[in-house]
Image (cartoon, rainbow over all chains, first blue to last red):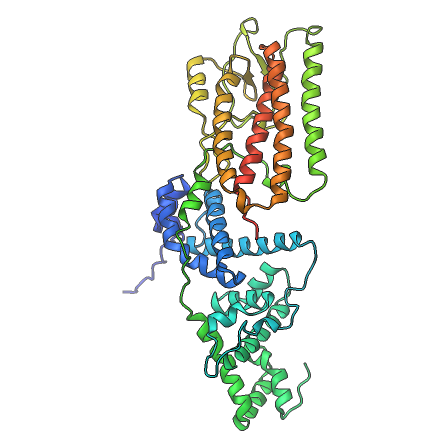
Length: 190
Length: 292
């Protein structure tokens, strides 16, 4: 008897909101469900904001902006990706848009990385053996290098994705990343 | 990148970025690794740079210094009107020098049109506009014999938020179109059907029912904006207040004209439009990101 291999049943990808009923409830206007989503994701959103802007107070404001925007846009979430992924991408967009508007407010076009790593110098001299930890060293990076380093090495985005977010070439993000790592090494070994 | 092999320390440094990204050709990779084996400093540099991404990926999550939910809830709880146009199209108080004249011009047009209509209304037959219209998202369905119409039938020139009554917003999806209880009750009570795309407004019709709703929305939004005042840019606040003053002036004039001609559907619609503009502006201000 010949065994006949049956075709695998076709299964549509399960939307993430099916897996997480709070997403569906929140999309339908359930504020309590949305609060639960907030509690579940706030640290990751805040971590990304804090590392990208290097200012915890500002990061808290941006985190609030992210969740307000998520509430506004939740009805547009189709579940093609995980809710966390969708929220994470929205966080990046909110931070980058804030940076653009803040740049306009300063009424000048500036090179984010002007200063050539001088920010890496600690505000007070480090005592012998008092090494800066990685978190503090990231905070001292020039803004452009910090954003690329955070998105690539901390958050795991690919160069192509980062380049698209930032509106630059992937060659530029690679150069920024290498520079960031060199500056971090210098700070960590100082 | 020009790499001369075998590599010296400068060549090693020049090739390192591509090596770490996996972009270096095989020959360059081999040269980098060969140099690292014989140069302690470069070997240490390579090890450090390879360790940094591993350490970065293992960084712990950071926690805000306070619970941010209350601020978020405050901003999303308000019942506000849907914004059918992108927020950027609203004349929002940023540093655009044309914003104020544009608002003033819009208000002037509204008021002038209202006064002109009022002044010439006596010379025209009773108000009845029934031109075909694009399908409205929702319309108040109340056809009535023309003789019975106490209110004017206004046909929207385009589907816009101008004729959209307040909704129970403050929830995701600005496109949702929940009706206020008052309007819904009015619809249910009428028991009549009206052609698609038409909307009834009148002194004792929709306006009387929606205006208190607008007022409540405005009050709530004003409270939110007031509480966020310290977080907004002062120049933004200044322009916002000036814009609201212009709209308030248009609202006052529309109300005044409507008091003299309570049956004017046109004036009611103008008032409706001005109130909605005010709500949209306040809503935008409530949602504005905090300044740096």
